[in-house]
Amino acid sequence: NAGVMQNPRHLVRRRGQEARLRCSPMKGHSHVYWYRQLPEEGLKFMVYLQKENIIDESGMPKERFSAEFPKEGPSILRIQQVVRGDSAAYFCASSLDHGEAYEQYFGPGTRLTVT
Amino acid sequence: DAKTTQPTSMDCAEGRAANLPCNHSTISGNEYVYWYRQIHSQGPQYIIHGLKNNETNEMASLIITEDRKSSTLILPHATLRDTAVYYCIVLYQGGKLIFGQGTELSVKP
Image (cartoon, rainbow over all chains, first blue to last red; front, top):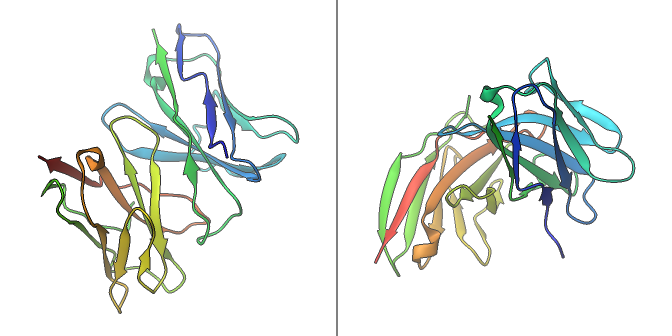
């Protein structure tokens, strides 16, 4: 049973370019969460999505960042016009259902470097 | 803000039990206690979670006090590969995991 998959594992972008990060949840999971870990800092929640719906985006920066989880295919975290401060590890997690009783399983992360 | 307090770091001898404490004095009745760990820069790994009763799985045991204000994660026979940052998290706000600073566990030979 494959776990959460993320690609690419490493992504280098120049300032001003766009970054697209992909997350395929575990089989049977329809709840996806994105977290960001800045260098030497803890993980911070960004956004929670179900299929075709954004449920909670309270941790997402208001500009340049967007997320989607279409009916078919992986969840996408999109960062437009990247800046050096976007350099971080971005982790995706998925769960079978939503709520306090359902554990989230994390992927290996995408390390974004902005030059 | 995280609702938990953990020691910044701990050491444990290889082969011995590692007991990692966590205080969560403001936990409410329907909030679960979760433990994750992050080895180096890998994705966080789920370990165990519980509500009221003690829990055990193939990785660890979770002991929750009767008043639920604190808990202890027990790794029964620590190995060098258990060296990691361990996060105790009270899951609330609709399933958002709020990570604190965690405990950096060093398992030494």
